[in-house]
Length: 427
Image (cartoon, rainbow, N blue to C red; front, side, top):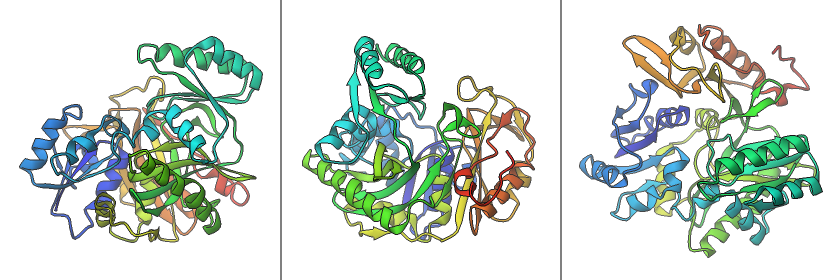
């Protein structure tokens, strides 16, 4: 089977590393791909906004499955436009992708389907929004309604910070006629939980803990993610069963009732508090950087699982994962997330990747001759596998220390929540 993988980041590189292991795979195509994927896939330039051209490419190359990495094409309805002429595509329809495409839709959906989540209100004007936050007080959470590449959330610790976030988001989105969602601040452990879905059935697909803020100790602005580890130690079998029963199952039932059965991977961002799991937000695609720590632990063939989601033949239960821990650290360009400085040269990546139990995935790189250059905000992911978080942490940072890149930085405390009671991290 020929497979087309859409995307260019660390998530797609990690998926490619898993897909090429499948005996079902004949050729893997990636669009646009990245330098790290060059040895894994035939890289092609396709216009994600021109769905007809992607359909034509799939017909020409006899593509048996299209795997869509990023969220924007899913929200734009690429799965609908591929499946209409009979091309199998892994991901939700445009109608189902609203779970990520609109925070307001997702929150209203949770309320209708009794899915536990933070209390909230939606606004399109600043005066009503500011009155609400003054009534509720801080801390409080301000979210842009639409897609924001992981950077549309402000956890405001003061009323002044909340008002600034309201002004910023409503001004930015006035042309799009989109609003904001203001939510209760939840306390607990934040966990990324994944389930593969075929519209009617769900297969538990692991957990991870992401590190959203740019600075160590969870300070600074939110980013697309600065690192992650898997499994999340707070997700034991009992808690996972609760998430499947209280969040995943009613989501599948509710989307089917709307005439938009959910197929693909459902990514539930959770807060695990004293009363149990609450939904923070839905995503409708594999996480980044969570995928980089999920697939190294997967102990079965990924490709037939994706096909089962598309074909409606998914088994229920739990996917098979190693008991080992995987930990990934994002290397980002100086200035990220506000104004990343691109073009700096990276040395030593090959030395890092040569270490045992270490994998490098590219996120924002480019080649100029033999030079490896930064070409984005999040640039490289260094992933290591170990018997526990401490071993994976040590291996990942040992690899990072072999990379010579003055133009970039990373957090030195990925995994700190899991280690805080037992192992000291020197940040």
